Length: 162
Picture 1: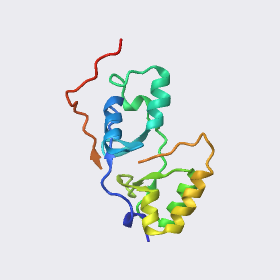
Picture 2 (picture 1 turned 90 degrees about the vertical axis):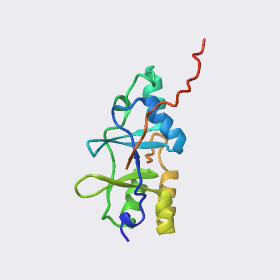
Picture 3 (picture 1 turned 135 degrees about the vertical axis):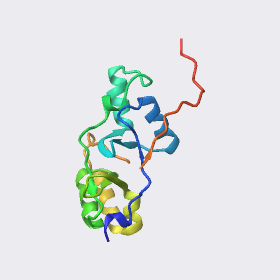
Picture 4 (picture 1 turned 180 degrees about the vertical axis):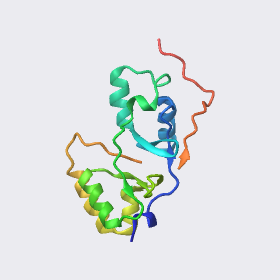
């Protein structure tokens, strides 16, 4: 079985020019831990909740004024849509990640594969990956992971703290 048969095809993506506030709002609404970042139909990075917390907050960046590009991880790990479920499970275990973007051979984002997707296809693969993730060093980062995220404001804003 190949990964395109089990991956999730509808993927929300962020633009590198979106504000961190916009991306965080999408992540909260959809309960995502990360978003692929795409520009001109190409995957250019990943944004995780950890990127926002550690990179942006620690640097004192204002989420409404800072862009995804400023804190995203540009080194994206991915798999191809024609790879076997078994091989992808091994890659996920080796990288200690729960999600990976899926590209076609033209390097266009076509989906995302999660540990849950693997569990539905082959429970032993998912179990092996989960064990590898559980044994991951504390410093490893997880990636979550093609609908453009909407960054329109809802009109409701919290009052500034004093």
